[in-house]
Length: 539
Image 1 (cartoon, helix red, strand yellow):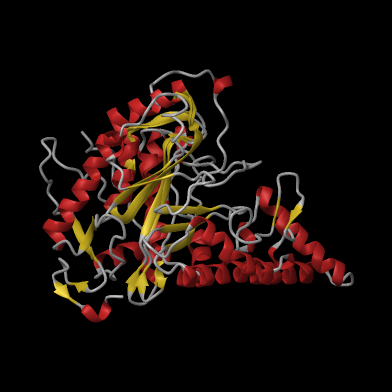
Image 2 (spheres, one colour):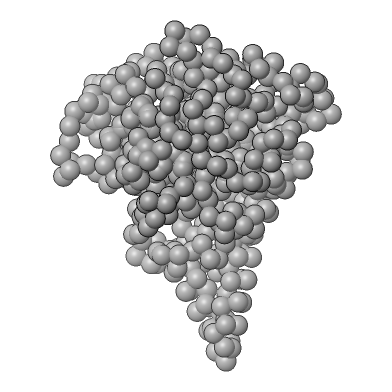
């Protein structure tokens, strides 16, 4: 049912070489011992008490981790630190007012660091147990040239600061100095934040949401020739962030699907290359180990509540698993449970649909960046695949061990809110798993619980489509790990270009054929099937 989803796409030479050689060991699972986890980070807690649409525990058993991004929930396995929950993050608000200095070079790093302990203690109150800690700072990017469109305000204000001190300087000198000051301060804010929180809560895996990114959105301009690959210039810019990968302990790329990419090969490629880039980063920036990759996704297409199709479930969850991600985080906001229809399959008029906030954030972009769901079906796989490829590439560099990569994804398409179909879950979750991600984080906002209707809609989707697929791919990843890797590593495609085989159980529930998969060993193990103890490498 989940095979035969499209032609293979040729990989970048660097990634092919990396896959052909023995891969660095990576961090073992931190939750249930499963090599690939699917985490539910959707605020659906209102469906039961408020709308009388309980999400039965047996319906949620598919998810290894359950959490809510809403304020008031503490000591969860997944904690997201938005810009107003962690220190004094300098940024501009939606009406261009300066907050905490506006640009990073105008902020107070000392005051910011002084605030961190109290903020971390508020949400992570004990050292135990281990968990994921995701910093969601999206207002500016630490690489100067990436602050385009609505983020150009950070470059403009940086130039003004320099010009005010040196009115006699020529424009080119002002720009050069402004870039230096901005990038240096941005680096200090991110690095010192990571160093502090890691020392304070060392058992958590820390990283920044959307890092690394692949910027493989060129399907908007080049539909006919779209491959999903991460542009070479963006791969190079990710390598400029070696300092960030060296300090991170996990990677959190996202593979949100725009409905344009629904049930398409392009959607699969979109997811696949995003995960593969994360895996590349996870392996190339660490000397002796790879960072775990956790992929963020949504159960619906971006900016709406329509569920992902069967093909897109495979492209998101299935591909993430097959690529070797550590897991998938299903993300959502309160819109999933603000009405009864969010869980029961009810229909809403366009006027009833609420606009989603930014993934992991409480604001909307004035110029939204395209995601998977804006693509036609033919481009989904390319979009996802190259984004993951870039995250994996970054995770490889700079550390003694590759970083874990976790992808963020949405349950819905960004524009319409339609839930991802089975095929689209394969394109996102399935691709992430097949590439070797540590997991997927399914994300959603308050729209999933906005009414009784929305709650029933979500309930039906969990029971009929999402839950069964998640159980299938997580059990398959576990079976492959035990049968092929002695339980000491996770399975990932031998050739990331092989798009016909996923980490799926057979229709009768029996294990599949894992010949297309090789092993990514955990720390302390080595060999083609992770059969050789290496205690000196265990950390």
